[in-house]
Length: 79
Image (cartoon, rainbow, N blue to C red):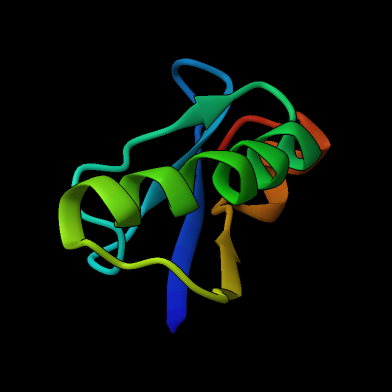
């Protein structure tokens, strides 16, 4: 089984969170990117077994997105 997991950054909460259609019901977040990857790898197999009756190997593809303007990165105001 292959699972595509999006890992997105939320500026307001200052944390990473997951989005996926491949693991029904899985919504995870963490302040640490690496900790979130570990959570996914730990929790997804149990959720797939419970929600989809799937037991077997899982291949994860992680896609990351974090949007900021160059001015935000440099701490400059626009205008």
